[in-house]
Amino acid sequence: MSQTPSPDHHIPARDEHIHTSWSRDHDPIRTVESGDVVRFDCRDATNGRLDADSTVEDVAALAGTLPGHALTGPVDVADARPGDVLAVDLLSFDHEGIGFSYFYGGDEGTGLLPEEFPDPGLHVWDLDGDVGHFVNGIDVPLAPFPGNLGVAPADGGEHSTTPPRRVGGNLDVKHLTAGSTLYLPVEVAGARFSIGDCHGAQGDGEVCVTGIEAPMTVTARLRLVSGMDIEQPQFETDGPFSATDGGRVYATTGISDDLMDASKKAIRHMISHLHRTRGLTRSEAYLLCSAIVDLKINEVVDAPNWVVSAYLPQSIFPE
Image 1 (cartoon, rainbow, N blue to C red):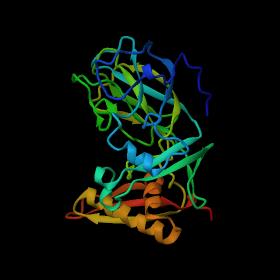
Image 2: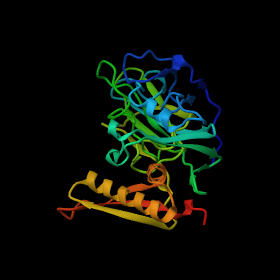
Image 3: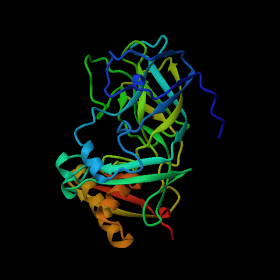
Image 4: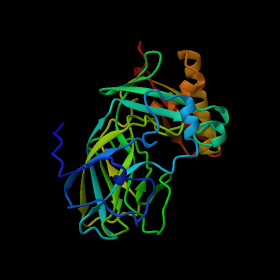
């Protein structure tokens, strides 16, 4: 792997560099030239509200109190204009040795299966090099990426950081790891790029509503691309695309005439499998599914039912 170039700019995660909404009216904290390398210090999604001593009571206290993801920025790119495309070359990620997977109580209605988990859940991860330690000797391979990154929308006012948008935002594409490039359509002068919500790892689906949420530093190159016209984000990346690639997996299927219901069934069956065969509590199994299990659409053409499967890599287990 080539060495990460020295950054032209460093944006520390000070309060004046953090915002929790998307808006074209956020003042840029720095203007960079196309091609500059920027080192962004990013807080975790809770804006530092959790730490190594946190409990499920602290997760319950978070519910309904977070204004949005803590994003570092915005950074303007000189000469960026509406209709341009901003390429974000993700060069490197450095975690701080800690991460958090959690879900809120079922009354909050978040995650894939809120009706099955009335009480909140939490696992504080010890991130050790390129693995994260779970329970019962289970180690999850780390593949860091930013969950939330994008440019300012043209629409006026402030906008939530929760849903993804045509200009990026909470994409949660776990394949935006080091070496990948994200292309974003620019809608406002300067582009106004921001980044945050970094994850140490995540299963496709992020089913409990969090991956391994972690404070992290991201080094990226920001450059304008000529002759490219896109309506929504696009990206380039390298495989492997899953912790399941090249190894044995155990998979559970969900079959339904609705893709969301099929997804729920696949994860519900996987939780039961982990509880029965690996001795995890159902809460632990739900958290682990969000961090490592990949949901895959197997078919959408055999009406009236579709198939979604949940893929679990066997390599994470101590034996």
